[in-house]
Amino acid sequence: MIQLQDYSIHFQDKNFALLREQLTTNAYSKIFVLVDSNTNRHCLPILQNALEGIELHIITIQAGEIHKNIETCQFIWKALMQQKADRKSVLLNLGGGVIGDMGGFCASTFKRGIDFIQIPTTLLAQVDASIGGKLGVDFELVKNSIGLFNNPQAVYLYTDFFKTLPKNELYSGYAEVVKHTLIQNKEAFLQLNQMDCIEHSDWESLVKDSLYIKKSIVEQDPFEENIRKSLNFGHTIGHAIESLSWETDAPLLHGEAVAIGMIAECYLSYKLLGLPQHELDLIGQYLKSLYAKFDLHKIHSTNIITLIQQDKKNEHQQICFTLLNKIGAFKINIHASEALILESLAYYNNL
Ligand code: NAD
View 1 (cartoon, rainbow, N blue to C red):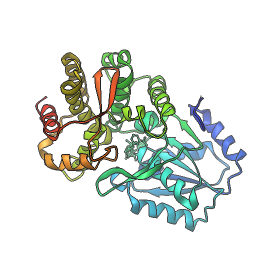
View 2: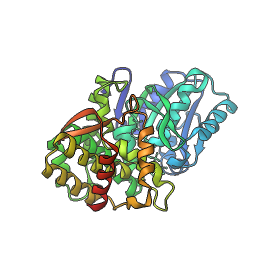
View 3: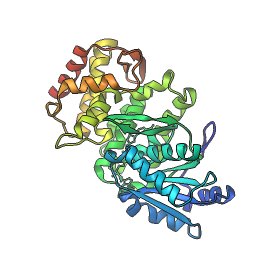
View 4: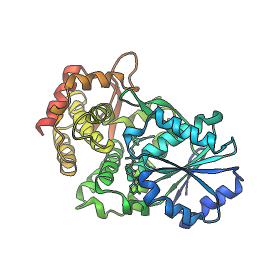
């Protein structure tokens, strides 16, 4: 177990015994479980089996980032209302980052806030989205632009959920694992480079190592005033590309877009902070070996700039990047001109 300031992260809780104990001890009036169509099929039976004898009220939404919006929140709030949830109810978010971010947001705002517990079922959600308290939904194509900070009662990590996770979703989550090493730990990045095939990773230790990096950062800066901005590496450009890709015939998963964002932002790092050329090449080649090439010509580059200007991390109308001065070291609040951002996109396209 890892103790954060005000909640615990439990690893491989056998048969969810600790979760059962937590639910029983808290004497919740009703226990709700939020799932999407996929986690309903693949993950819910595991939880229902483990919590046999405890009454669970299931709320199912459609799967996918496209449903991470206010309309789906209204559906969830309505379901809670119709099933008479009160302030002593709890919501278990069983799914990936979409379920965790949106379920946490709905729980935090329903009747001024009810308890929620994160049970992340994707690699991405286990190493990243489920901790740190960022909750919310997308609005007007701007990722996570409506939301708040609030921590869950607990997080339960169970890597066996990955057994049913599609391969592209595993790779999507892996981008955040790579990001954590790039901002904090060169040795760990080089070790990832040595791995033949990520599908056969020792997930328990990989998840733990990656999560520790995020945990140490969010504990130092829970409200993203300084070093937590390092976790945005690759995301300023990545988020814009992710949103715009939804309008093409090749929509990208979050991590796939972040991988493109990391390559482009490494180029900015090389130009603005002197990231060594051999490190730029190493990162670019590694990410290129993991993710299929996305043709950025499918997206109008001025739309990318417009969306980057909307990024919620910007301050005083200035686009703020977190960039690397070398692998394992970063600088926050770096500004780049539009021309240089366009150059970084061309660099990705020509890689
Ligand atoms: P996701 O929740 O859409 O899950 C990916 C897909 O996998 C979905 O189709 C889902 O139904 C399916 N799935 C989930 N678990 C499964 C399982 N065990 N077996 C089979 N299928 C399964 O997406 P994600 O990649 O988990 O998360 C991406 C989201 O996380 C984005 O919205 C992103 O903005 C957010 N995010 C949030 C934070 C944060 O700090 N809050 C950090 C990073 C990313």
